[in-house]
Structure formats: C-alpha cells, structure tokens
Image (cartoon, rainbow, N blue to C red; front, side, top):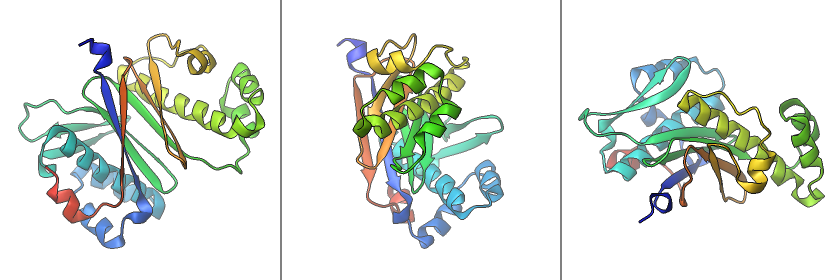
Length: 235
C-alpha cells in the first residue's frame, strides 16, 4: 500500500458543558505535578475547565489509540513549549498530538503517522470579522475574504483563522518559522510548500489539522460525556 494512502489522524471533540462539577473534582486528582502547577495559575473558571478537560480528553484519546491504560500515561508541561507525553514502560513511542479549545469545546488531534498542529474555533456569526481580519491577516488574505460570497464569508474567515493557528502549532513542533507566503493559495489549491491541511466537519465548529505530510483519512470522535469512571476504564 502506498504510504501516502495509509496516513491517518484522529480528532476527538468534547463539549465541556457535559462535564459535571463532580467529574471536574475527580479529574483534578489525575493531573501530573507540572500540569497541576499550571492549572492552579488560571484565574478564570472556564479557562481552568478547558485546560483540565482537555488534558483528560487527551488521555482518553491516547489510551484508546495506543491500547495503553490511562494510569500509564503522563503529560508533562514544558515552559515555552508544547506538553510532552510519556508512557510508563519507557519503551513505547507516544503519538504526536495537538490540543485546542474554544468556548465550551475542547479537542485534540493525534497521529502516529505525521507531525501535526490542530486548531478549533466555535463559529460566532456576530463577530466583526472585518476588524479581526485586518488585525490578523495579510492584505491579499483580507481581499480574498472580502471576495467570498456573503453567505460563505463567516465560514471562510474561520477556515483561514484556524488554518493559521494550526499551522503555527505545526511549525513550532517542527522547529520551523511560519511561512512568509499567504495562506490563500494553500486553501484554494492545497499547494502548501511542505505542509498540508484538512478540515474537521462539524455544524457548530471550525477545526483544521495541519500536518507535515499529507494524510488520507481524518477521523472524528465526538464524546457525549466524560466521567472519572469512564476515564479510568480506558484500555
């Protein structure tokens, strides 16, 4: 089989409104020391919950993907860099991953085949996308956005925004600088000069996975809920 046709990534999604306060209290006990230190520094309740549920979702996803018990998975936070996964046996190689959150949603993307960056955005139709694009996008990207049909402009904005965020994470993982060229051509033609992107389909969210190699399959798992018992039962 052609290697390019077998590369796969999986995106896991969870609405944190489905996580009870009881579950949150149980999850706090599962954090590693470096995670607990960072968690304690968040002032806003929603940001604390995003962080905590995101780390538990990551553990569930890794456990299911690699058939490794959750208690054998450790996540270490690193200052100025992405967190790192470790397995208790010290031998198995953990998957590449990227975590994102927006509003009441958290998600993580995983792959054993490619390096990746993932961004998730809740679609807000009332946002001032013109002002946001002027602050974040290059002039030709702004022009491209304004040329989109009115009914498609919000979706186009979030697609471009999420691609930029996901690409930044990917380049950071690869130790590379962000490409200087516009993302417009990559979105239109997938001519991305050393990186690739795939959209995550969801009616309320925009998600983008950027990877260093093309992937043939992007799977999606949306959890209905997550409890401490379900977490501990994994693998």
